[in-house]
Length: 102
Image 1 (tube, rainbow, N blue to C red):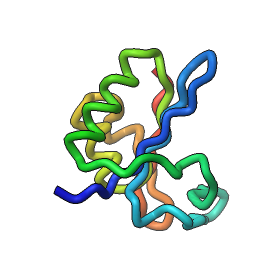
Image 2: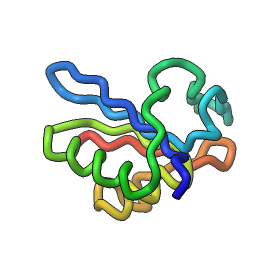
Image 3: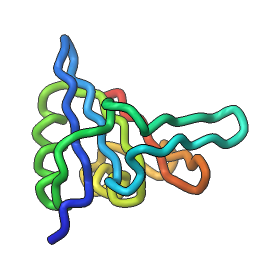
Image 4: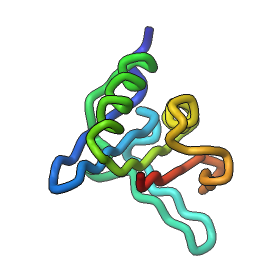
């Protein structure tokens, strides 16, 4: 099983979890007034396979976290866990992106 989802947990008073498909790291997406920078350290997390990423995101969800999901696989994990739904997903340059402030 390939490790192609990056998960990074930023711990502060409330955890902020950055999740992206590995091949998107280093890109800047721009479409109209929307821009998303995936080139910095914010998304540069631990490479995990789908199941491990799902378990880590689920664990973080129990800790009152907020989430940033970028990419098909990452957003699919979020949908599968019920963290986001289709209405909360936008696309920038055809790449799905979702924020979850639970």
